[in-house]
Amino acid sequence: MYEDKTLTCKECGNEFVFTAGEQEFYAEKGFVNEPQRCKACRDARKNASRADREMFTTTCASCGREAKVPFKPREDRPVYCSDCFAKIKEQESSL
Image 1: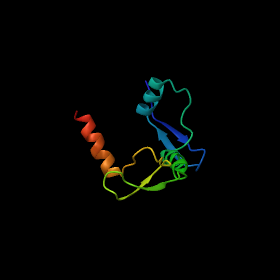
Image 2: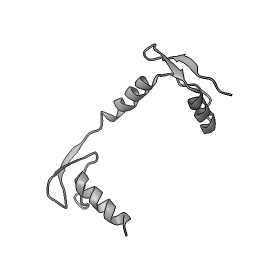
Image 3: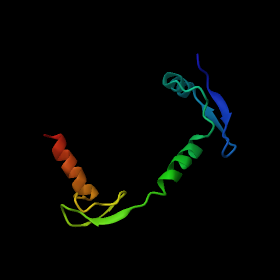
Image 4: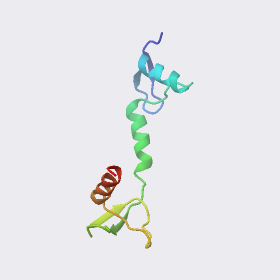
């Protein structure tokens, strides 16, 4: 049904394989266009937008340690470091 295809990345110009499995996945999802970039260029493009994220420094409401968060903390809401946040989420899911 599907056969591996060799495509050329429009970003770097390198050839990459669009496997039969990937083609089947694209068809199942309803995608009509073939990928235009190799995996490395797709990943680099994805990560480029994440690097611009502004981080804010605050104090954890649970343990008092410094915490960096990707949103501006408000005075009326507690903010937790990643360790305390994970513990709280774990406790909530076990209820």
